[in-house]
Length: 158
Image (cartoon, rainbow, N blue to C red; front, side, top):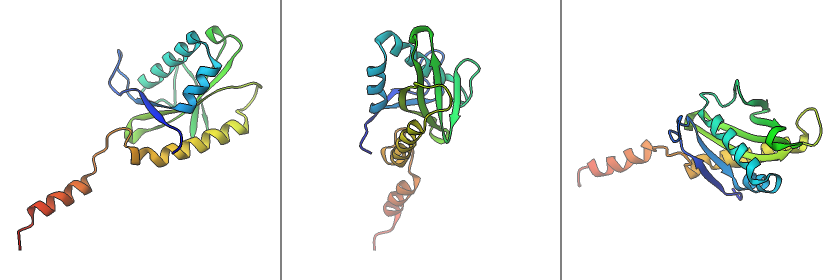
């Protein structure tokens, strides 16, 4: 995958503790830095922290979340964001308790999420999913390899 990704929150950290580890694509971070001032970025970071505390990050009683195809968008506008209609795109993997921020975009027009945003996030999601197991963003044991090594040690010398 060409875009770098970094951990920003580990499962179990914080008070109350995060239920999900959170990773952010560098492209999403760069976009947020271009779109938002430091106060606005901190506001969005706090929303992502709150999202990580949810048992199901696809639903919330306090955050405005919508499913878009096979990923989600956290929606916010007004308040600290002023006239910015912001979308934070993400997906999560229950098996790894991992939430990945794919992008941060400013939505210009009312209505559904524009096709170009969906295409962009879909491509990023495919690339991240392909590398999730390879990079082992959240440690995963590989018992098959371990068993093979144990079998070699246990074999009698011939």
